[in-house]
Image (tube, rainbow, N blue to C red; front, side, top):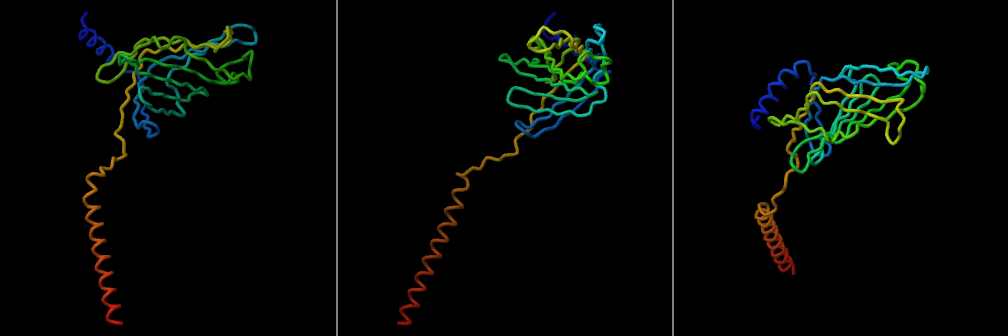
Length: 223
């Protein structure tokens, strides 16, 4: 399959998959002004250990009851943060050397006493899960829309072999678009302004000279 036929197949699959996706838009002016548009249809599976020693899995449809969403752009990166169901997820994206977008990091925070988790064996634990090898998930880009279809991301506790908490993010459809906005700062062309400035200075100089001559004549007449 050629490059263009592959892109066409991906485009047609995208149209089919994105029907059930929810759309979110983030506008921000901090750092590099931009708009981030997200489309997502996913299932987040969180596994935790119960007091009985058994593992229990909770499935959350994403997005579901999103409480807060924010993001920012900086150079060749973009970042998205959202809160839902008492959870917080961060997604970071990066443009690599060959101009391909990929996940840079995916992270999940929550408290184990969240009502989603019944009879947790560690009910007062603050849990931090991070994606493993997410940088290997590259996006297919069509018309500046970066898409990942049926991508699976495993999230685990950081720097430990503890498996009491883990999660899997199954992205049936995910796309993001970063639209950079023109800066509102205007560069001042001092060369263009130099002529009017010199003209004003010359007029002021002439006025001062005429005033000095006038004052001199007045003083002579008084003497």
